[in-house]
Length: 212
Image (cartoon, rainbow, N blue to C red; front, side):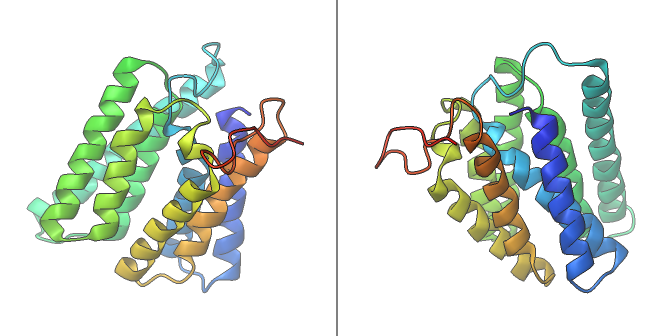
């Protein structure tokens, strides 16, 4: 299934969460970003994320996501170094939006860049002693080199992703981030299950693809 479809599903989950949980503009942006990123994150694996024939609209969307993430990241850096204020919510949204842009890109260069970002996230997690952030960085650095629709497309990966969401939820004290993370990730597996290739939900315990 195309990345644009997963992105749409994740965005819908985030909007639903924003409507369900106590609403603030900051929380709504966080729910949508987390859900959209979670719905795409399984496709951090391999180089066959999307077809090489990406439409002009998809290319434009990717560029907007990349530059939007860069803009938010620069804003977060400005607040940190000039105003001596660290906004974890803004920084989290910036990183997720930026990585969404990379998820829709192909090739070894893309994989290397994503892994470098993952290593940077691991360092940040180690520096601040945030276990969930180190786990997120490890997932980001490791996943691009895995076989497509392999380990990242399993129920085990969804549970791990949900646990990272739990860590983020505790860090930000924003209700429902664990659920949004887990459901967003799970939506990717469900959507891929209805494609001809299916998904190896229980790999490596059960190596056959499950499909509808």
